[in-house]
Image 1 (cartoon, helix red, strand yellow):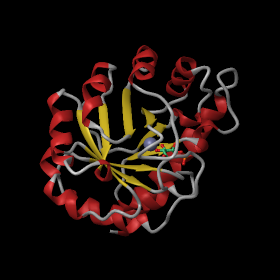
Image 2: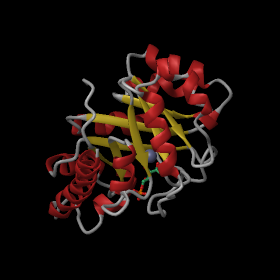
Image 3: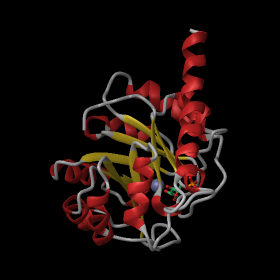
Length: 236
Ligand code: DX5
Ligand code: ZN
């Protein structure tokens, strides 16, 4: 997995057909997505339950590219090895999930996987400056985690811009998660994000038997994001 700051679209399979995850992963990759985003929820850190490492291992053979695992669980550390063994390429833990995020990121790096740090909308960037050497990705949540289909929280765009400045030339991805659509993607792309997670906006209108809408949705988000970059560069 080499570093690439181009816009990447990462559909969240939280919006996929739960009875058909393997086929859904193959369909979104065939329709042009870059990463596959897997939302792990524990009914404790967030008010919803989804799936665990066994499901990640089951879908891994159906994903050719990056499997991006977003852990909305507390505690995190007892499960890191299991998600690494399940084939996650990126393992992201929440800053708010416990008192020892530095140790958690070290443990993720220790498995040889890329380490991500997610921040809830109410969390500031202060701690990130002390963790930069351990990070491959920072995920800015643009909804409160727990459910797909929520409204984008626009106040987070300034946070993305500040994070972009903090990261400088370091090879750290900025991921946006929640409420990403062709309308909101340009705001975060222009502010410096490169990985755009989208659940409902990718899966709407399609199915494994009719996957073309997935491709149209992915292209619409990507085109809107890239157009904002063109404008940002043109303005300089
Ligand atoms: C929210 C999840 C997101 C979510 C995105 O807790 O982490 O990945 O599924 O869904 P949309 O794009 O529908 O907001
Ligand atoms: Zn997510």
